[in-house]
Image 1 (tube, rainbow, N blue to C red):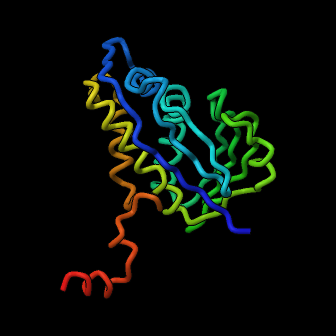
Image 2 (tube, rainbow, N blue to C red):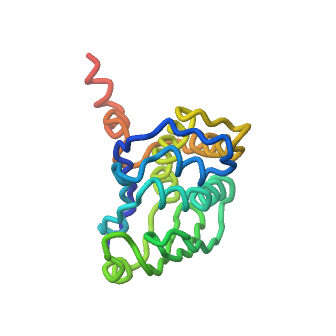
Length: 193
């Protein structure tokens, strides 16, 4: 069985709703994104999972950030994550060794009610660099939205971590890779003639 993992960010609307009382990425994201805007979609073994920016992405961003940071820093690792959102309620056991990551998940509740499909779909196994690449665009989008809303790393210290981790991921995920990056080297040069 072929496994798949992708993240589609969409083009969510943002609000310039800066709250000087915010201290966390979660609080800032909840202020910067309205409830009614495009969702992010995570694709797990060909099953699409909608994630709202305001109340899903805001709640999972810290764990996702720590996971990607660890995967970029450590050659091997094992983490269990209990995602805290009530519309993205799942537990992931993530193990990476060498070039591959395996993610075993138990899905309790997701927006759209596809838990049984997700639980039946099995684990995701893919190269570590492909997994972390899928998080680059969401991290960049969130960081840009927070900057545009007036947040800084002085108010939200994890904003600097978010930007740093995103910059350390070498490529974007499958849906956002530039076409020329996917072509064989000779094809790129031939197209410039």
